[in-house]
Length: 452
Image 1: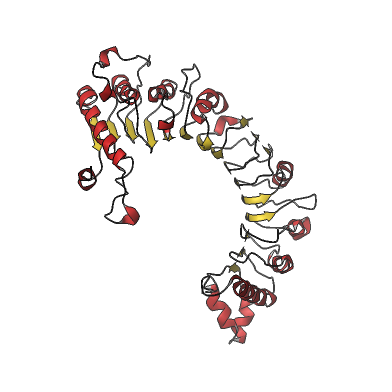
Image 2: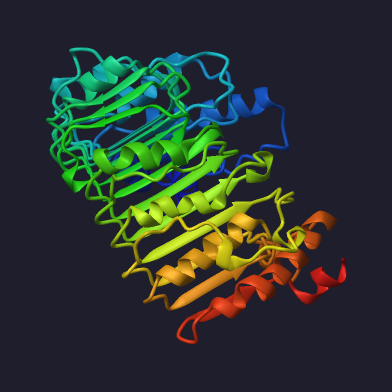
C-alpha cells in the first residue's frame, strides 16, 4: 500500500494503526503526501509537510524500519530539531537504506548527527545518501560492516573526514561524491577491498584523487584536470572523464592514462574547446577495446587537428570500436572544399601500423574539415578488418523532440555545413571505402534539408 494511503488508513483503524507503528519503508516528500507545490505559499507547504511527517514519526515505534527517505524540497526552512527527532526514531539498528535530501536553497544548514552512526547502534545500514547538508564524521562513528553504497551530494565534508568515514566502511562497493567543495584531496584507503565503482563530479576545490582500493574497476569523473593516482590499477577497466570547462582533457588522457590504467578496456572522454592536438606517444592502451570521444565546440579552436586523434588509435592495438562525436557549433574555416588542389595521395601520413582489430567506427557531427577527411581516410586505409563505417552529418538533429515526429531545430549554418560535409564525403571518402565495408551515411531528414 502506498505510504499516503497507509497514513490515512491508520487514522480510522486501530489494527492498522498498530501495524503502521512498525511500517518498514518510510519515504517522505511532498509527492508522497499529495501536497500540490503550486497551490499554496512555501510557508503553508512547509507547515503542512512538518505536521504530517511529525504525526507519522511520533506514532511510529521505531521498530522494523528498513528504509528511510526524507526529501524536504521545497521546504527550505525546516527547523533542524524536527529533522533530528525524526532521524533518531528512524535510524535503528535494523535500518538498511537511508537517504536525507535537503533543498539546495535551505535557509538553515543542517548538520547530520554522527551519533546515529555510533557503535552502539550496531548499524546494518547498506545504503547511505546525504544531500545539501553538513557531515563531519568523528571517532564516534562505529564500524559500518554492511555499508555497500555511499552517495554524498553538495555535502560539507573535508577529504580527511571522508577518508576516516570510509575506513569504517569495509564492505563499501560504490562511492559517489558530487559537488562537495570542501574536498581538496580525496584519498581512498586500501582497506576498501570491495570498492569497485568511484564517481566524482564537480568538486570545485579538488586537486587530487589518490586511490588505494585494489578492486576498483570503474571510475567516472566530471570536472577540471586533476592529479590522479591509482596505487593498484590492475582491475581498472572502465574510465569516463568529462571536462566541465575549457581544458585539454584529451591531451591529459593520452599522456597519463596508459601508465595509470594499463588494463583499461573502455574509455569515454568529453572535452570542451580542446586547444592542444593529441600527441603521438609510445605509451599504449594494450587492452582498450572501446573508445568514445566527444569534442564540444572544437570550432572555437581553429587550429585543432581532428587527425591528431589517430594517436589514440595508434596507441590502442586491441581497439574494436571507435566513436567520435563533434558537438555544435560546427562551422569550420578549413573545409576541404576550399582546397581545390587537395590530393589525398599527398596528404600527411601519421599512422605507422595497421589496426588489426578495429571493426566499427562512427563519427557524428561529421564536417568538411581537411583533418576530418584525413582522419577518416587514415582509418579506412589502416583498418583491414573494418566492417562498418558510419558518418553522421546531422549532428544528432535526427533525434526527435520527446518521441514526436518533430526534429530538433537546425540553424541555417548547420544545414550549410551538412551539405558541404555530404559533398566532401562523396568526393574524398566514398571512393576509398572497400567493398567489404558497410558505409552508412546519416543525414537530417528531407524536411530539414528543404529548409536550406
